[in-house]
Image 1 (tube, rainbow, N blue to C red):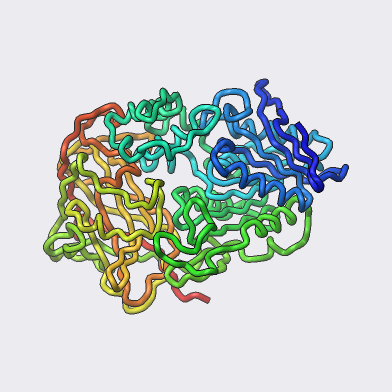
Image 2: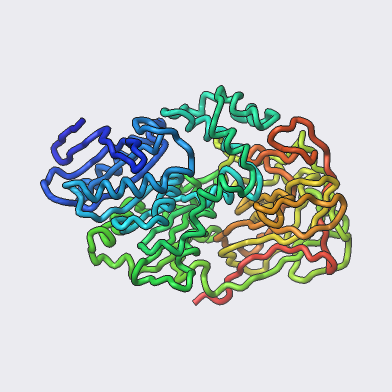
Length: 561
């Protein structure tokens, strides 16, 4: 069906035949002039979600008025597209075939760009690594990395809140999640039955649970091991509180820091703001005000990018700084020549305690020097029936934000280690890692860590967090049970931060064994955590001192020039 307005032509339900014979459906927005234009493509499973399609149409009309054909395509099995929706498995080839179809259309000049957020950013990368000859650039916003790194599994742990995503996405038309009592549903055991609690017999959910580690099911979806094939300009955009921030980081560094990278041939740009997954919509997040400078003209930035790399307009965007990051703490944008910035040095902050690090009322310390004074280890009890809660705001139970963590830091099953009060400001920008020695009374358990910025008034502002399932400590494709009671080296990748710790503040590390319901609970029983309902209480120890050096490694700016 075609609709002709005063400025644009709208075509709805246009079919594209994929190489396997399945027809996908697109809505096309283009100028009325009878000539060829560059094309912008977005592919999404969310087009029946309330408000989502309307926002995309607004973007489509904006770009069409600026001389582009804008195509909104339903992913396979969604809305008006044929086939079955199988998240992460078909989108690369479908994207390739769609771009081939675009290049043959009378209104296309053969130059195609892709754009989109979240899943619609992930499928750009799945397409880009296949090297469609007519794909000239992408704008990847809050991109998911490989599935086993972030969703539906993170650190070997099931991201339990993805059950709600499956309830949203299963079927041709999306189901509003507001109808569910999600928090109650996610408490159900066994996890295998949660799809039924959402009123579904979900093929997607059952497939995911059948493949809890890096096996062939997931290996065929991986794209980040193929990033060296991507030799087109790409803009990477995310926020410090984006749940999928790691994808933007690893994609940018995977290309821009590779030995063969040619910034003149395929310029990469990175933008990270003080934003959550739904980025660039507010200056205030969780009660923390980042100032009017926190919002940027994101649509205008995208237009400049496409004008440069699809129209050849010499607007200078590829001569500007390749990295624009918002530094929290001082609430200023910083233009960098690389990511991570080159003038950074690793600083190790060693864990210790004299009487015990349990809760914020303990005396856990982060010190620049390793000390054998005090206790050899800190101990806590992890009870799966009373897991450490994940602090969120509103209905999004997995969302990150600068939320005050003191409510969980009062718990005895949370170890709290913190620095002395800082005498001068410290810029911490880049990758953060926790190296530690741990033991458990179980054969498998979880360890969770987070870093916060502690204000003089006590506010413990969340910066970053992550989790690891102990049996995957040597790799997601190499499960290995723990030996109960044996001190074992562990590592948690705490992703990246961009924060200035001001004078009078402290750096704090929290360590526990859960962050529920963001992550499924480890039941400590040595069985399948996805199919079991019974659990065991585990005794956890975190060791420190010269024999078991446990430390938080942070990147600190040296002298900024």
